[in-house]
Length: 216
Image 1: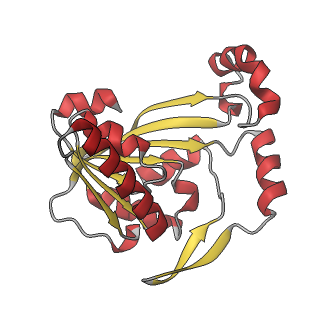
Image 2: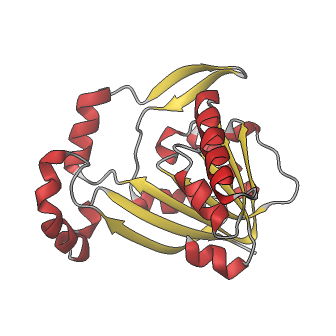
């Protein structure tokens, strides 16, 4: 991500799903003009509080806007140079409409960067199955009405690549990382994890990063 930001100088960057807003703040600190959106007010409130703390510590404002806005309702007339989504796509529904909206929001020649959980990993799938069963969608109430929310409906790097390609975003890079789910049980296996992530078992890693570029 930092390489993409530096390549553009001061890119217009959209983060979808603010989470703990760590990446939003980091990207703004590194020169991006950041807009971050989330469908849930409690996430936006927490993100704005963290932004205010960082700005007070710096003694200056950051070029960062945080808005409560469902992705499918978001409108931007200029288009973004970079879209960033970390652990968000498995929550986006309806999925086809969401991919089309992402492609709409990025400028021709702009980039989409994604970090996601990998559906090929059997340990991760078992962990998710135990937690959520086979209920892949939830109905969540928001101020804008009921929102369809993906319930950890993870997908493979190949499926993600095909979905983006269908809406005009071509793959630039893809890399697997992490061999085991995030659980203290696997903390002692970090060395083995790094080895597996570099070898032929890489497609079974728990996570991957993807970068795509919208066709000009």
